[in-house]
Length: 256
Image (cartoon, rainbow, N blue to C red; front, top):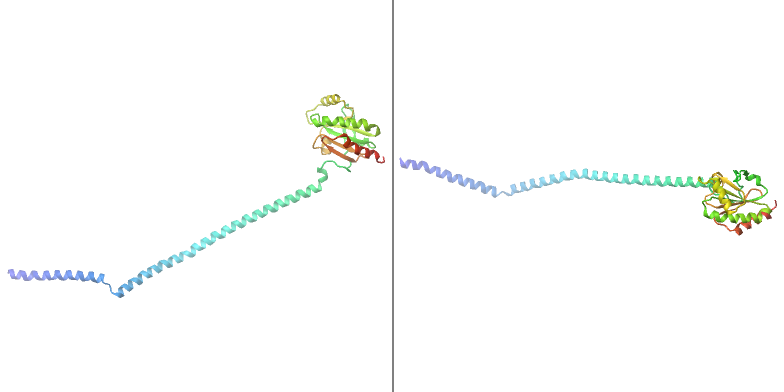
């Protein structure tokens, strides 16, 4: 009976031994791959890498296209800026040309009266109450001074013209002052100044109309007319009697 049990248990040991050897064989077979299996595995690995490379290559044209589009937009933006800059330059040149043509066409109306020009006529009230029209003085030489009681240089220049009046008045020179009222000088103040300075020349009162007509921009301004009413000389600022005496004598030397 015991021998019979021992015979039945022996096969179990053999089965276990075979099972152990089978596992070792299987591990050995997985460890020791055949050259064919290894080659197939390498081929599969390479195929996977090539596929990934192809996928990256497929995405590159899209990136390159986006890059090209960005570059095109950048160039297009630069072109628009260049066009806008040229348009601005053309506009400025056009405006400059228009202003130049306007200045040429209206040059005479923008600059002060000058020698050879017929003096603009006017009619102004005098300080003593009468009125004086410039054209009524044709046949005599006329020396005018545009001034203001607030002009310090004018106070020094008026006596110079008063002296010329006394020197050449008998020869046919009319000297008169034209006071430009700048808005705050009453006639009484002008009369007081004229009296204090001992001036005897006729003094006319202008509210700015005649000053604009003669393009007076600075005080004092002196204008000399010949017997026909044409401008002979224009002086601005402090001017000596001798400077104005020369043209006055030339006017008298002309035929009436």
